[in-house]
Each structure stands twice: as structure tokens, then as C-alpha cells.
Amino acid sequence: MTPPPDTGDGPAGPDQAAGPDLAGVPPEFLPRTAGGRSGLAALLRDPVGALIALDFDGTLAPIVEDPAAARAYPGAAAALRRLARVVGSVAIITGRDAAFPAEPGGLAGVPGLVVLGHYGGERWAGGEVTPLPEPPGVAAARQRLPGVLAAAGAPPGTWTEDKGNAVAVHTRRTADPVGALRLLRRPLEDLAAQEGLLAQPGRLVIELRPGGVDKGKALKSYISERASRLVLFCGDDIGDVPAFQAVAELRQDGIPGVAVCSGSAEVPELAAACDLVVDGPPGVTALLEWLARRLSPA
Image (cartoon, rainbow, N blue to C red; front, side, top):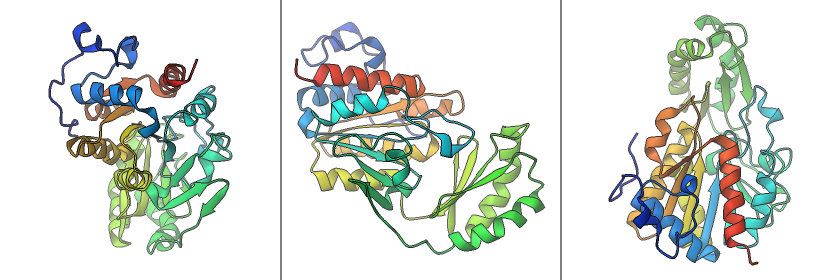
């Protein structure tokens, strides 16, 4: 995993945070990289030009055993509502169907919110979903999956989630979630390859999904659509790495940005790809609340 290109990846000293734009930034929200600090300073100077984009599960919502029960962390929706009134755009970029974070997930009241679901392949806006046809290979993988899991000796507690345009195999409920994921990874990768799909690993899950879409492409496309002048992206899992890389690439093209990791013990290596690490959904919510206070008119 490659960290964002930067000059001066070391921790920010007091002199680096003393400029007028970063004055008063709490230490826990001060990016460790020069590029991240420049991105945050740009956001504080020019919120109207900013896109704030976030993953949902593990970032805005705690990871739960049943994905259908996931809800935004207390305070997250209120902070996003305040931010949506002062920044240019707010978006959720998720592997789920586009409607879930907004409606059951608790974010439908965020003004102007757009949810890019299925890694950017589907869109929710204003209560309406732009549907997509089921990608080739997903139906066949769905049909074959029970046999593949049985042949691989999937332990009790292994379960599948039908995402419509993808299918996911979870091991969180098994007696040994990490061992179960290791056991199933190769058979699921083989199934994905045979059906022309990608096997995307995540936090105790492997998702079989179509190629050609990822969160980095979705982020860049939406920035272009909105003509955003800067970006903050926050995610928590391997599927968010393309978006972190997109932030770094955009910086090289002159668009400031901040890559924020919603940290967890399950994916500790993700921190190396980011400018700032906060403590899971509570830390993400605290960051959003601080930004809302800092950017909102008195």
C-alpha cells in the first residue's frame, strides 16, 4: 500500500500548524503530512469549493454483524447537515446499493446529499435511485456460491449478502473469522475469475463484484462533475484505497486534498495510505462536528 506522495511526511510541529489557516486546529485533527495539512488549510479557506466524501460502513457507521442494521453514528448526520450548508458538496461513496446510507442508514436529511453506490455504478439523490442492470457474471456467481462454499468447507456462521450488483461472503459470525476468511479466499477468487468478476477483500468479508468501477474513479468523476476545487475523503477499508490514491493524484494535478482513515485494529495497514487517522466512526463524527463548528457562521 503506497502512502500519498508528499514532501515531509513527518509529524507536524508547532511551527507547521501556526499559520492563520491552521491556527486552532486540534492536534488530533492535524494531518501528519505536508500535503494533508495543505489540503486542510485549503478546506478552511475555501469551503464553498470543497467536496466532502465519505465511505459509510466503518466510517460513518460502526461495523455490525448484520449489515442491514448499520446506522450512522450518533451525531454524524447532524454534523453532515451543518456541513452541507457551508461546503460545496457532500457525497457518500460505498459498495452498498445507493439508497441504503441515505434511507435506512439515517442520512437522507443531509441537504444536497448524493450517494454513489456500488463503487460509483449507481446514484441516489433527492430520494431517487438511478438503477443499473445487473452486471454479467453476478447472477452466475450467486447461483454457484453455495456449492463453492460447501466444497471449501465454509465453517458455521459463514453467510452471504446479496447486494444486487454484487455478492459478499462474511466470516465475522464464525468461531475463527480470520481463519475462515483465509480458508475461503482462494475458492472465492477462483469463482470470481471464472465469472469475470473481482474478489474484493474487506473487513472479514470478500465481495464478488464487477470490474471497471472503484471508489477512486467515482471520486474523480464526481469532483469533475461538481467542479470541486478541493476534496476531503474518509474511508476505513481496502476498498477505499483507490480513493485515497485518487486524492494523492489530484494533489499532483493542483487540487488540494486530505485523505482521512477511520482507523481500526482490523485494517491497521490502511493508515500508511492516509494523511490523518481518527478513531473509527466516533473519530470521524468528531472531525465532522469540529469542521462544522469551524466553518459555520457565528
